[in-house]
Image 1 (cartoon, one colour):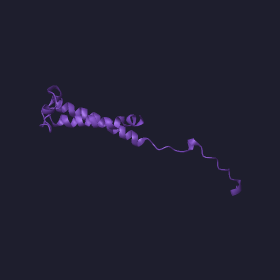
Image 2 (cartoon, one colour):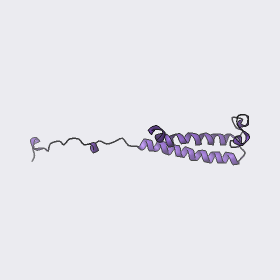
Image 3 (cartoon, rainbow, N blue to C red):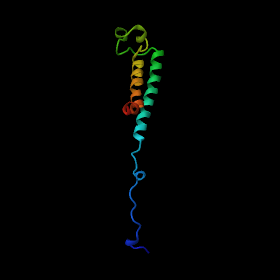
Image 4 (cartoon, rainbow, N blue to C red):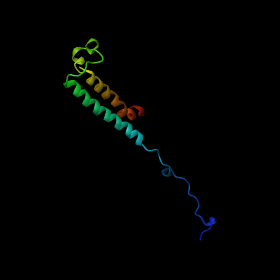
Amino acid sequence: MTSAGDAAPARPMQEHDIQKPARRTSRLFVLSGWIATALGMILWGYGYFTTGTPPLVTWSTYLPGWAADWVPNLEAEIGMVLLILGSIPAYWDMWRSR
């Protein structure tokens, strides 16, 4: 039987004892970016190769003809937006660390 006085002394806290916050949220953030990029690529490809709904913006008035051909309808526009927005979470840590 041990008494309270016989207990082992508390050891000082060391650096490896402190648990660092999990990077799970960062991983999910990056994963959501890659998923959005993949979905955007699929949706843009579908919109580029099919005849869909009319685009929201008449790109031929703002862009040269070769660039306006890349977004012929609404599906391609949404896909292009997802492609661009999906790159933000995928590379956020790289931009933030600079």
